[in-house]
Length: 85
Image (cartoon, rainbow, N blue to C red; front, side, top):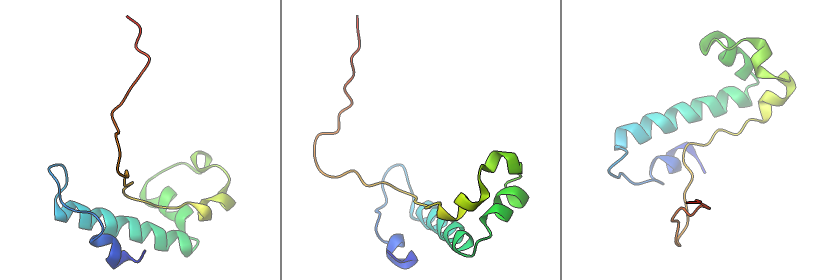
């Protein structure tokens, strides 16, 4: 899905505004492009100030997939647990 298609894939709701969606998608697309360019380690260490030791194996960083929202399909999604009383 292209960047512009992503902007219209999700609808506004009570928790997110169109501006929030736009900025989130823009930031994620920038991270995707930086990763594709092979410069994600620079971003993570210089911009986000992570220590190189926190990044793990540098060769694996270029396989990061940046996603912003996960759509839950139709159905009953109530949380159920094994609460013991």
